[in-house]
Amino acid sequence: MRAAAISRSDLDRMPGMFFSANPKELKETGHSLLDDKTQKRRPKTFGMDMKAYLRSMIPHLESGMKPSKSREILSAAEVLQWSQSLEKLLATQTGQDVFGNFLKSEFSEENIEFWLACEDYKKTDSDLLRCKAEKIYKAFVHSDAAKQINIDFRTRESTAKKIKAPTPTCFDEAQKVIYTLMEKDSYPRFLKSDIYLNLLNDLQANSLK
Image 1 (cartoon, rainbow, N blue to C red):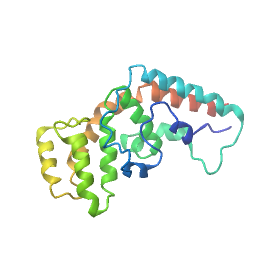
Image 2 (spheres, rainbow, N blue to C red):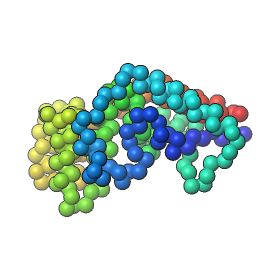
Image 3 (cartoon, rainbow, N blue to C red):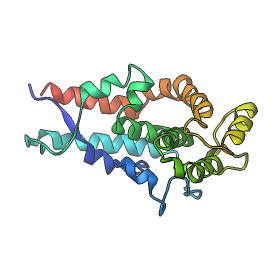
Image 4 (tube, helix red, strand yellow):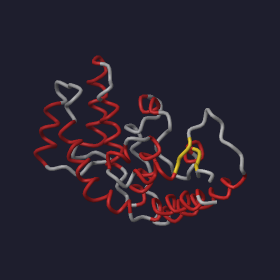
């Protein structure tokens, strides 16, 4: 029985994919997700476009060609693990990308963008904390932020105070609020979405061939 797999590099070429497969690109100053305040909203047909794209990829699995050892692949087993918890889904780059595309279809991609920015921020060198903290705050937390996240007033004010003397944990409170929001709201819908179910079903079907 041949295991079904989709190349991560193929997923990286999905239409409308926001996140780069290379996490280091989050740190680039030329075109950062924190600086892109003019990103246009995706049309409502975005989910259908993704569904068609995923299905169009499946015939390529039938060629019998073995993937290069240097290329990571996506298996049905891995995609099935995404249904165990949001933590499992966000633990992989591909999971983040696919979930990010789903959030775009719901016009709530700022949640995962903020969560990923916080994860990147925690790894920041101490001498760069202030600069990056201000960018994250202005992009997502400030009351006039272009990609304002949905957090309560107390958390917003508390975060504003913490970035005045930034530490690697100053966004933890706000990040936890957004994680819980995604976990209880978006994640259950993601597991029932065409984006997830078609990807999983197609991989499982091809594993039986």
